Picture 1 (cartoon, one colour):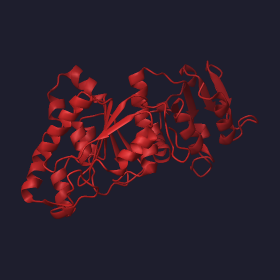
Picture 2 (cartoon, one colour; picture 1 turned 120 degrees about the horizontal axis):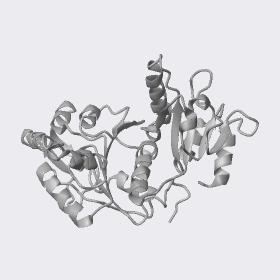
Picture 3 (cartoon, one colour; picture 1 turned 120 degrees about the vertical axis):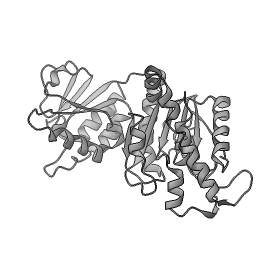
Picture 4 (tube, one colour; picture 1 turned 90 degrees about the vertical axis):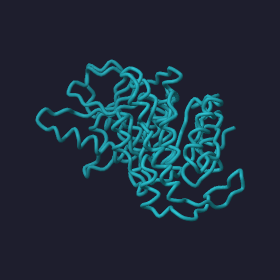
Length: 338
């Protein structure tokens, strides 16, 4: 049932099962479980209290994955580290803690600790010992090993099923380089280590949409947005651009189109940096660099100077009909995703 006060996507993950793996010192009662369920009201969300000892936790998760057969597994922090090793499933590792022992030591997590969320066994506290730190060191050494032992074709298939998402303000864990050395689908989102509503909606939900589309064989209409329509004279996003972009990515495949000047290679990296800063995760791997826009195939092209060769519908941004991004929003709202 839809809640008018919460952003929900009832058409995503409909009838499917999502398994959530919580972080260190948390439990299945984490607020993230409720957030996922509220966001995808037509999906089933399952989560389990993970044992403190990592080998036991990994054994439990493998057994539960086999039992539940989830369509998607999401893990955060320590849970993201475990999630990487649940091969054969579509997975999202959010701020994965692949260096648990180092993280525990550097952030003073040894000694008596308090569980952050209620546990089914009723425990309130636990002891983090040197021996337990060693156990975490041993479990993290198992990350990526099965992937690297696969043959090339099997490894490529597995890599396509896994996403790593990393908060650009995460001061607790930084394993982007480690993850991206093994998996190509690694992206940043605006947020810290602990997900809030905004970082979940802007950073995680778009990736879940891509995964659901792939699982369903769903092909959304394509919208191209030329870079000439993005920035004001100060290099900041034009008024309502981000609002329009957020609306469009919910219904369409959206790509940013930038020029590829032969004698200015820096222009490409500058375009990538701007896009990541202002459009974030939904624009990841959705930037097209070309000097021949007429060769692009799609349904809509929003451009300050539309090219004549485009076979779809061209929207002349800045014209009387599409003077602002609010006008573009109105146009696409009337289309309703068509």
